Length: 416
Image (cartoon, rainbow, N blue to C red; front, side, top):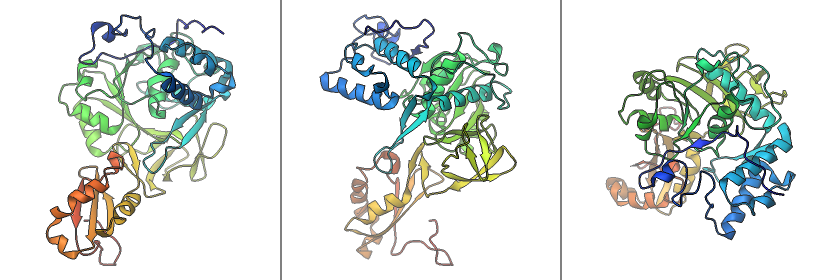
């Protein structure tokens, strides 16, 4: 079938050109002068098959058979129109799949029903409205993932209160970036500027009064410390890792209203707060279920943290159920890294922890040869080389050596 026309209200993502791109590219076109979205993707036959297979996995394209037509229409505009038509046909039962970070093995596919993502998007729109209390957004069209009625604004997020633009510093193929960089703006009619993968200083050159910044705590901290002032009336939303005290402090100094979203790829967003000493409030489409949380249909969610409830809808985080920590927004298992190091011939024992000062991992090594403790520099190059095949967040930044792993008075492992 021919590719359906691109709807007039299909939200377009603007990406400012990088250094070295010509004016046409900066204006959303291509170096060849093709209109926005009309340039050929430039993929060979194998790359094209891989790209279509990935989209099929993420959007279940085989339900409508529309994936075959992607092979015949090799431009972004045509792909966007075809996938939009697929979403329209499938409706709210369509599963949308995201991948975990893969820091502890192969990335895992996690599917969320479109109806759940739509409910979360509407809840987030209400939370992000200035003065928002997390109340439910009035019923909105939920036939497919896509824009609501053009110009739509909820009673809790009036047009005059909406952000000027949404500046997205995170990639949209992860669930946080998808929600805030695509689904929420599409539902609310907010324009998007894609800054993912750009240098930290790009934010200061791009941001305007009233903009909403979407980032991980790590990326927001880098952007704010680039030094340029943030215009008045801007706000930010962070997720992907806990917002440390310095992120809250940097945001306050910049005059930036900060909202922290707690959640995970497996669960979607769970709660939100606007101060580091406040509990999290449940997003309005969720409910408390015993000591846990239930989704919109009442199904219990598999949380990665233990919660301490302060009431029916407010909670504090008590820490991970497992021993995973987050480094720059990526889940990392210190125990897995320690086992990786202990497998080395020159290592007798290893312990790995998160360094609260640097936010990176540190490792304590008991070498097989105790004499190496006197000259730690002799073994450190081998240790760093052993970690080179790990994801960057899982590589210890600091190595300490000793004849025994640190323990406290009770004999239990302790920090160093």
